Image (cartoon, one colour):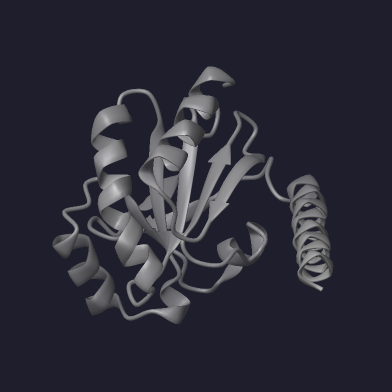
Length: 168
């Protein structure tokens, strides 16, 4: 009986994984190769993300997300380590957040990379409406080539940083 439940569990995990891969492939074919222009938190100026400049990582987050808070120090650490080699943009889903809380979140975590505000949800929809936090690794055409959804170990995140830089 135990073997049967292990097989069933394995099949379910395999189906979920395959579904996620198919979803990501279909989303990646429609997302990307466009411009993202959003207002920057501190300056309120419009920022145009230039994907062709250098490897680009987008971090979709909200201030109230416990996993976003868990991963924030990891991303800050990796930003400090790789800021000359990659562009990192935090994209806050302001349409689902509170501006004062976002400002507090940035201060608490000592975030130095640009925080852009998705005030309408249009960018979130354009990126495929990923859960939070979502690290999206973009190629030079603005197409998602890798993603990490949810909280994970810093080593896994760093491996994706390195893979993006190696394949840019």
